[in-house]
Length: 323
Image (tube, rainbow, N blue to C red):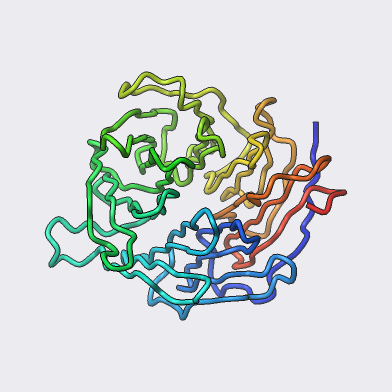
């Protein structure tokens, strides 16, 4: 089986440096975070910038969008976390997680908004997930610390779609899933031999895909692992990239996955067949990919967006469709 994806649109005002994170929102806009210190919102029809924040003094590492697409949480290389209300174009929350005057402060790297609202999570160099208030009047107040038990840098974190769990990946290759209601470590996966830079949940919360420097993607069925016990938890291993896999996402229907790599390629995977069905070569490393959250029309494989080394946001759609 082969699926062709075509480059439907390029952004009109590229970032001046690499794009490190990207998201396609429920309002059908795209957000990109760059090493040039800027975060931009893009019009999906024209590729024009519709909103942008003034440049931060350091790179923007991570972003997380609310389910309704009206708010975005983003984090700088220095650990400054901001909540941007896109409707009013105002910063409604700002927290300097690196502030050493706060007892036990741990600078955040990757961040994730809880879909249920009220809190957000941040990874740390100590291997913990810190849970903070996302309310404007108490933004950044730490509410809990979820320890992985390993003093390894947290590379990525993502809440499950129901907001009841959070997945953390580390530079050691471990992936941890925490139960947020009990505050306990539920599962540890040892599927990778090197750092896991990206992870994504399926929309039904049953699958988790992880992308690693070991050149592999691993699909985990989070229902199949005994609580608290470490193990691979893998139901499929996807191979084909020739260098680090930097990003991954799962389509809304759960049928396909997309990955971006340091080998300068984007691959689309059929998860049932466990194989790549499309490969596109890019001009540089592909640091971030994201599916359009809107389900694909009948006869279409859907659409996704990518960003990477050249600073360009690119929209891709399945050939022969208007997805």
